[in-house]
Length: 300
Image (cartoon, rainbow, N blue to C red; front, top):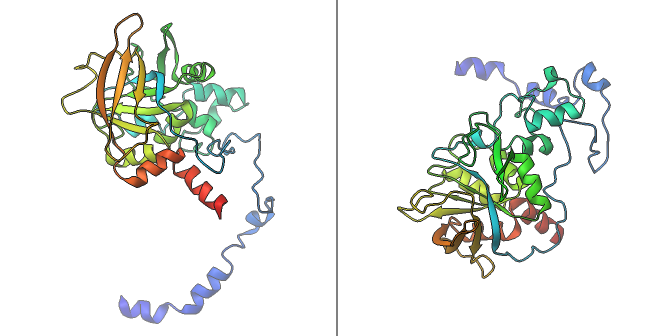
């Protein structure tokens, strides 16, 4: 085999093929494409849209603030996978993402999948926590449902996040053990960010997903050993305040969470910030790795 390779493969074969690699066939050459240093976004496209991650970014990050009066968008159990958080399969026509596509003139037969439309953040944010087998403990219905608090009105997770955004209410997610297990799916961190989730409080995190959350500017908080939503008596319907962020975070720092039930007395408990090193702290301070890198480019 080595002798066949030695006598058959020639340098000029690679030189010739790579010299014309961008020419393409006649079909490729007939395609029109814009030119210039800036990509021209097609506002009618339902596959690729200009993402919102860089909107309103200034040269310096704003100071971190405590999370005051947050509501839980979802309360989840153990072993929630990245596919629960951001499914890659088919798009149900009655889901928020399906309704978005129908409103934009896409026929049901042309829906394709979440994975194929991952270049459209409008589809992917509507598909976040949209797995039809997701069990959100705030509601008895499986799938992409939750309740909007304090009225406890049932609606889709995306609709609730839009209401909270209008009301300027920050959001958190609560989970059990091994949150974010499974494949390292980037939209499992991007989607919650676009929904308005500022922190995830879980009993434990899958290693890579924890890093992805920090990389998108979402604060991963871990219950103390022996603590859980059940042992602390949390229902998920409380208003949550997380203090200690604006005074300056350090790797592994502990912060206090106050949970106030509607019409009840508050409960306080301590959680650990899963910012495992100073780089994590910098990512969170900038609101994620994307804004941090952009600011570095702007500074140069």
